[in-house]
Length: 420
Image 1: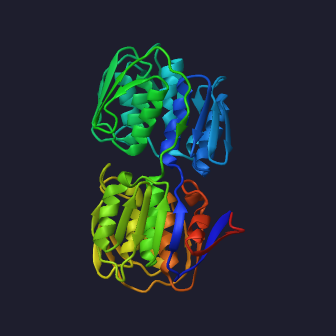
Image 2: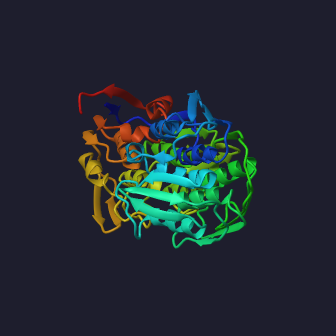
Image 3: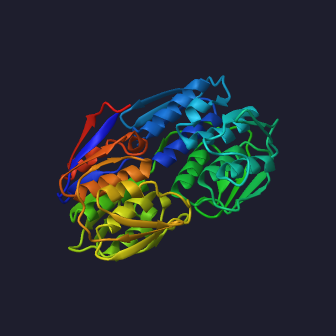
């Protein structure tokens, strides 16, 4: 198991490239199950979640090979139509194989993600949507069993916009008979990117990037190549790292329009931001201002930036409030940030941060993907040395983060630990 050792107190300066988007890749890969053949996905991030999805698809008979940032997929010989618990428990995005398998083969067996059950949970949106398309869904021994001779177009309306459910229904509908309309569809760039990939494969899809998506089913699709969009959460994380350390840096090969709301909030904090094509340059102010945020579905403030914003506000001069309207209990990082000196108090789904207090290095433990990177951000500005344990959480979504931060001047290194 690895850990980060971080010497705080150095402003970040310089330039670094942004990786391909984790969440987009985890939709492009299962989309390749819709048509047999060879696919080439460029700008693919080399992260744990991509390898988890690769192993899952390999267990079905697909071949996956990642060379630098080029992922080659061959789905010509799919023989197993099951996503077993051993894979799904590592990554909730494994459920993205459900719609493509059902649409292409008429059958899918996918383990329920950990903690999910039939009822008012996000997985329910996937299942009810597929039932609207004519699928027969049963739950057996912790597995979703889906059957359909051929799906048929229908109107699918989500009570809450869900990225994963929007992808699953959109992907399944590409091979359905007739027209499918999804209302209150997720508008995240990753969904739009998946839709454009499906269009390259021959799907007839309209309304991408809006809350209403229309899919006219076709008889078959064909393989295609695609370049993965930049990771907007990595972009926001590194911008926050530059801001929290009082530095000036440029992020290249990104898409500023995918995180316009975050950039607006960073300007409210006092940062100067300059946008040029696919580059963002941020110059931190002498003193960070406290700014409240409430997470929302795209194009609002992303829940995946909530923890990082909390770390930033711990260094602002005053009190701020962070409210997560997407996930009510996404605050497991708060006690660990407290070990570094952050003054944060949680009440229901809101956290009050009293900023401006001195942070001091300590040993902290990663709790989840975004919470772990919030500890890294706080460590970058803390006095002394911080050890961040169990960074396998972080490796799920950030490609060689220590190298990217090192390019900007951070004193950070990865070390092996004896922790089990």
